[in-house]
Length: 596
Ligand SMILES: Cc1cc2nc3c(=O)[nH]c(=O)nc-3n(C[C@H](O)[C@H](O)[C@H](O)COP(=O)(O)OP(=O)(O)OC[C@H]3O[C@@H](n4cnc5c(N)ncnc54)[C@H](O)[C@@H]3O)c2cc1C
Image (cartoon, rainbow, N blue to C red; front, side):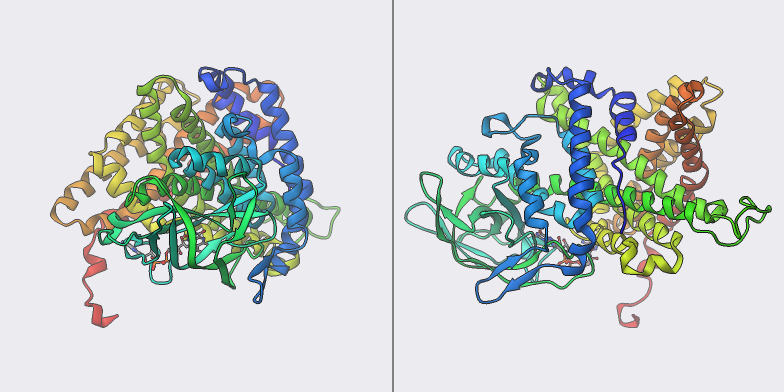
């Protein structure tokens, strides 16, 4: 069975040395009291919960999956999931970064980010139950009426109830403008909602006493397309005025999907048969309200992918040091043994270092973004709030798509380190690959993320936000430009920065002629910008490692070697990506559709 050791040392490095998180957070009125000891203590306890409670039920949860009782429409999560969830609630974990007004602990989003990374490493399928609830909490917190907030937020904060997001229907996924679920206004101000939703994560289960569905549906007079969608809150059990549970609402699980991975999470077909709901936000403005949840979920998917990259790496390293096969090409490294451990072979090291560089780079970028999110939420300076909000919006599709694409590569490499054993279930490596695959698809496919990045977030505002982010990178390049030791990191960082500027302008010009050029370049483009972000993080981490490499702490020696690996072996991928992005539309569109 795979093992998991929370990477607390690297988390503390990112928090305290790279980001100076305590100093930054203390400037925000909501976090003026935060201190390093509190952060470290929460991470340590959270790590124990992840590795001691969630890891042991990951492999078994995958094997057992969820079961639906067709007569009652009730779903049972795999053995141990309910007990682990009770422990999670008992420990107060759901409330970590929630608003104290509703019973939350008011700790920074940044801390929640690390907590979720550890839980995702330990058990992605289980972690989706609280993960979606937190998204529902955020959407209701931002857009709910005072009554909805009082009714739902305390229970979502404590975790006694969980939440879902119900967008997808059989005929509509990416294009939500096509959705058909209907909401009929009632005399008492509520709505009766009818329709079918599919692929609803954590849509039905036995972990919590109530499930709060956030459902997109159309009002009778709604305009066609995405401008006619409204958001409703639909509880599994109606809630009485005193907060206790009332009648069962007709919102049922009609079936469970049989799927490639995340077997422990119930992916439910949800039937709404005149279910009672209340409107969240303005009529026909449901997509805007739902975007709060969708953006949180997109960052969450990046975090799922980071977690899987880390755990796959850890297990592959243990195996590579233990498994002996063949001799090193340069001669025996363990002459006392009949063969050398496979970690002596250059390509095994390449696979391990790829996963390590993706995990540590992803951790740095995700934490950086979470800190910007804390500032966007809590700064008392409106300009700072806006600047941070824009930066988070820019980085969200990169985190979702780049880190999930990387996780697919990394988990597959780590499985390969195990040779044929990696393909066998009991080692747990093939589960990491299967679990990671969905992260490239749900929450808007990675293609859709790339269109959002290039079309909306970059070309949509003439590159203004990208330029602001680029300015931070240019300042760092300027500061370190004269340092001899930093040249190996600063030169390629400056170079990729220039190339992104040129590539953006070139695609922008082509898009004036034909908007399809954006679609032809976007996926390659996102990966190039993802590398720009990683190169920035890795160069900053390399600087710290260089400063402390003689301290005797091997952590910095390893950090420096991983930075060198990243710049020498992973960043150069951008050369071919830029070439394929520049190759443009015609090779894709030349062939007549009939010839496919
Ligand atoms: C396990 C699982 C869990 C899920 N959980 C939830 C959930 O909790 N709630 C929920 O509402 N949904 C959920 N989903 C649904 C998921 O978000 C959708 O599957 C996803 O958004 C894609 O929609 P689709 O499957 O309909 O594919 P389609 O939209 O039909 O897309 C098919 C292909 O066409 C591409 N495509 C579509 N439009 C464009 C375009 N304009 N340009 C380029 N390419 C395009 C897509 O990238 C994709 O490759 C889940 C799905 C799965 C499998």
